[in-house]
Length: 101
Image 1 (cartoon, rainbow, N blue to C red):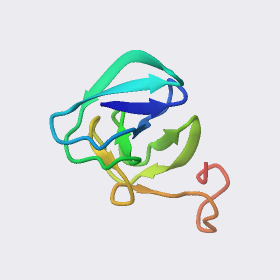
Image 2 (cartoon, one colour):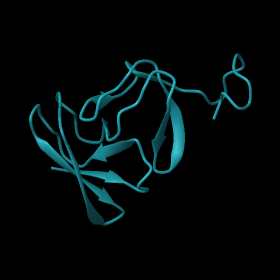
Image 3 (cartoon, rainbow, N blue to C red):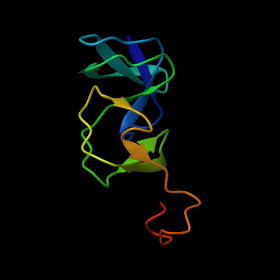
Image 4 (spheres, helix red, strand yellow):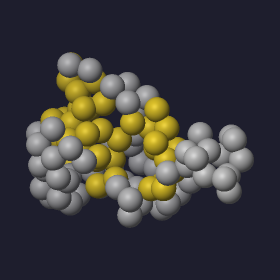
């Protein structure tokens, strides 16, 4: 199983085929395997995000080198990362400019 990261600092990767619990998911950074992998903790549908690095509640989620939101709870490597455990920060009037990054 493979998942795509564009930068080594990405905290999530996009799976390139569906992964199931226990599947080993290897990371590509660009077109090259970087030697990192995680074990899927649950079903990760094709095209969805898998956690690549442990995140604590409030941590910025990085995909393709860009902040896409913040973790709403701790997220372990191998877990599905989606609307149930992250929230978007862009365009929110209730956050200051620095918090929205």
